Image 1 (cartoon, rainbow, N blue to C red):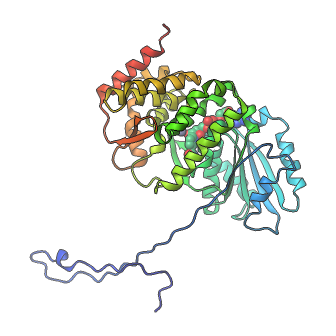
Image 2: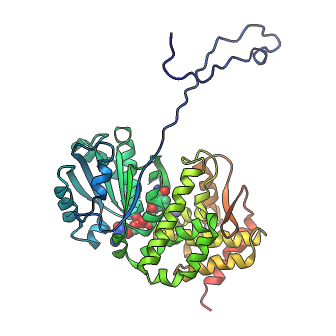
Image 3: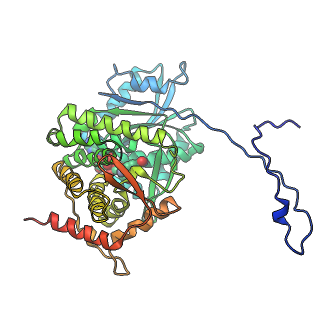
Length: 416
Ligand SMILES: NC(=O)c1ccc[n+]([C@@H]2O[C@H](COP(=O)([O-])OP(=O)(O)OC[C@H]3O[C@@H](n4cnc5c(N)ncnc54)[C@H](O)[C@@H]3O)[C@@H](O)[C@H]2O)c1
Ligand SMILES: [Zn+2]
């Protein structure tokens, strides 16, 4: 019989290994076919302005990029925080689809809560799946998620499990979602009190970054996403770090050109990393893009999500920078530059949740190390900074140095 799938290997049983003293029979006949294939992943990440202006072809173009001559069905889920800040947006989306009626059809536009609340909300995924069922959203329809990183994560997760994967178009509306979370391949929700306990690795169909959304963000959300820019600069690109330092004043004044460069370069570095690291779905134990995140994820929860993801990451990076100095891995002056840049961008490098204790009397934040390892599996692997622009992986953390680093952060934040 001809084998349909490519036959990669036939693994013969190891007869000698099978034979043990007193057991002289042959091993049972076994044949193993090794299935092997790769699938190319390709999705456009578009940077644009005024996405829902009818004269902007970006959305209609990406929706029809695989099948030109048909009307593409869209189920739009809109972050209610965005809807509040831009009360005309829902009408603009409907008018846009109407204008491009030869190529697009709006099945529904639903509002959903924005922010971490939606990732914590029991029943949020089921509610979306129910709507997908009612609207008969199929694998050739599009789920268009418009919102911050939390809403994109949650809607992306629901889209990823419905019919084993629907096409997802992300329209990120925060700095963090445009420069980091929205351009990646991860989706998820929090469950049983654990951040991102459920989720999928599922690349989006397209990402449409509209700079106009940034204008309507609250001050703290414009700042929070800059933490991810500092992060990726620290592990990948010293030149970009220098640029962030030189442009910190322009960034805190939200000057348009500076903001655009900060977002684009950060997104580009994330895309490059995911595309070239050889481990886009994090099968290994390392997560280099998550510098400063082991404590950040824990602090988000400990603070009852009072801390935004980016705010917690800023604290986490400062903590790990000081730790690296104490561990003799990073020059003290470089550690100082990292903290100073974060402060100049407007971050507060301390939060009372750093002092919360767990039931065993230890600092609760330190449990973040175990949870980080548990999430990834394998050996504990934490990315630290050996020099600005150069991340390194370590497999153990010295508790004494970490406590000293925490003390140092507390003293630094104390009003002088
Ligand atoms: N999937 C990934 O790879 C990845 C990576 C990093 C972070 N994340 C996740 O992203 C989430 C954080 O995302 P975030 O920082 O974008 O914040 P967010 O999604 O929590 O949004 C913050 C607030 O801003 C509002 N908002 C969003 N866009 C707005 C706009 N244009 N104008 C006014 N208000 C607006 C939201 O309604 C919300 O209240 C976390 O859950 C984090 O875990 C995911
Ligand atoms: Zn992050």
